[in-house]
Amino acid sequence: MQDPAAFSVRLRRARAKFASGTSGNIAIMGAAFFSTALVIAAFAVDEVALHLEKRRLQSITDIAAIQAARVPGSADALVLQTLIDNGMSGAEQKASAGDLSTWLLGDSHRATYELKVGRYVADPAIAPDKRFIPNGEPADAVKVITRKSGTLFFAGSFMDKPLISTTGTAYASSQAAFSIGSRLASLDGGLLNALLNGLLGTNISLNVMDYRALVDARIDALKFLDGLAAEIGLTAATYDDVLNSSVTVGQIVEVMADMTDPADLTASAALKKILKGNPSAKLTIPVGQLIEVGTLRAVRVGAKPSGIAAMFDAMQMLTASAALANGEHQIAVSLGVNVPGLTSVGVRLAIGEPEQKTAFLSVGEKGDTVHTAQTRLLIEAKVGGEGILAGVTIQLPIYIELAYADAKLASVSCPAGTPESAKVTVTAKPGVAQLWIGNVPTADLTDFSSSPVDGSAKLVDVLGIKVNATAHVAATNVKAKDLTFSHNDILNLTAKSVSTSNLLETAVSSLLGDLSLSVQVGGLQIGLSGLVSTALGKTLSAVSAPMDSLVYNLLLALGIKIGEADVRVNGVACQRAVLVQ
Image 1 (tube, rainbow, N blue to C red):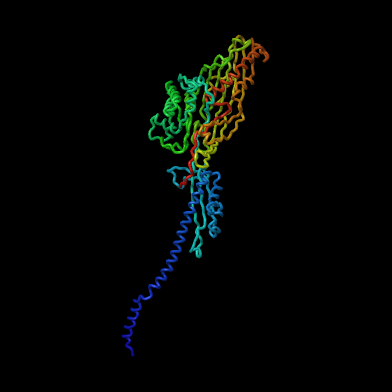
Image 2: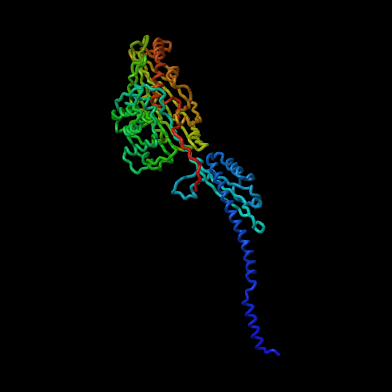
């Protein structure tokens, strides 16, 4: 019989030996590890594949956003076409992620996209996720969210395909500089000298070549503001600081003289002649009533953004600043003109504030506006009579009133992202123009809250002969019109016009044709067939054509047209669409 104690010892030793044995363990563990490694490798391959798939989808989404930002009005079609061109023929637009279970089971050609068109505010003070404003105006940015089911190579048999979602936001800023009024189609040296001397308080004498050189001299608006900042001693300033400053006409002329092309000696010499005339230092102008730069206000002086080149001509700035600077808003000028039948001509000009105090030249985006100032012109002509009125001086007061004209930037399109492809549309509306022959007290000219016309005008009051007259014609039917400017139009500062009628060239003839006369001789009233009326009719008929010419050139010298508005696009900036946060 076996000793139980010995058996117990042998059993413990056997167990210990079995427990410490390693034969076959490596094979078992290797098999288990290999299976696990295969699973991990499968997941790793799927993970890398999904990452690459998402990167590719992100690239497609970014391209779609960039394409759409170029033309926000056609964003939907551009996004869809981009997705189709990149292999997603089954792409559909959906307002949100929603229930995409059917898409998760679909093939790789299926995708949904969500499109938001709005405005991007490139302000570092605003959190990145708040800079895009859906439905903001003017629209200059798009956000595209693209979703599709990811591809699983190994895990697809036991789990749903994951949803891949990417977002791309692109922004393309298109701005244009545009102006209204101030076009000199005709140059009369004597007339312009008289007007400028009256406006500036100078006694200068420029010839037609001087004025033509000023019309042809091109000046960059932002560099002009840089020069003004230096002239008035602004340092470390922004364009906003310059626009909120006031300057004298002399300072404006001096900066322009420094900026004219050195090869253009005539323009430089003409500006220096004006400076020598010592324009009154009292004539100051808020710079913001001359030029507006919109979103560039926060830019530091001298740090001109690339791409924008807003140009104006020196004569345009000179006439605009001289008109706005007149402290009393009224000038009186005696014109030494040689007009047949006229013995003298006096002009009183009153200029009101531009509507909403806007500038005549603005660098802005879609929706920005510019306005002309309200203008009142009283021409006091003296005419030598004929026939029974021979030797009698006839007073002929012609009053012209022009409401402001306005222009709005309707669109700026840069299909290729370059100025050469630019097309700018401006919607312009001329101001209502009215002409009177009537009594106009000169003291009432500057009161723009009411009409200064007060009854009939006294044409003749001599030797018992009294002639009173009234007449009124108006350029009405004011309608807005779209004016489209090409790259060449912008480059050449081409002016385009909107008008209510052809009243300008026959303004006085139209007015005299509507004349209502009241004639008294020795206290007895007589009809229009009387000798006085006949003589007066012949006299006024003889001067109507010369007066038409005088009024036409006088208004052109001021950059004004009756019932018309002249618009120019002075520059355009076409920024290529870029991705933003």
